[in-house]
Image (tube, rainbow, N blue to C red):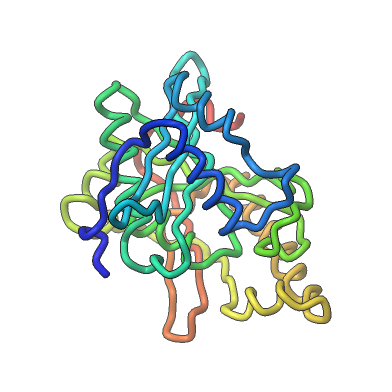
Length: 257
């Protein structure tokens, strides 16, 4: 089903916010202590954040939640969670939710949305870099600790920080043409397609950990050297590859934080 078949809008009322909490539980299968509670969705909505839902008829099948932040005196949005029910994935729904976040942010004069993402998640990395035009030049080690979600596979919750500069030439070019601006690749960091099955099984989890640790070192070295994630490739076997080079735009809110 095409993403155009769904209604994407701001959530309205407590029942829709409760649906966000339930969908979060369904997708990540967090323990109750790690779930973002209803109160936090209410707060996000009330203090200048965003809680947006994707609806198939009256049923919520996806949502995006962000909270406001400041850095160097500038306001930005931190998009903390993007969720799409399993059977609705690969339809463009996640991208539509992000684009509504962008539209709302620009209407309020906000130029940056950030979020974290797992560099071992191939499809999500491709969406962030190639379909949205986000960049990445920061890496946080074990940001949330060892979580209860089976998706993490018991590994440290290492995260890349996506910077989505909403008015950058990169993003505007992508939205106008469907392609990111060309750049010179200086290095690449690979993620094997088997990473999901390796994480899922205790007997192969050490393979996933070796990939995570090896890639962690490569990211930290590349970022220290001034490189930025500017591209992402997937091959026919499902393997992923981050492409890094020098970004020729000067968008920054003290990115070392």
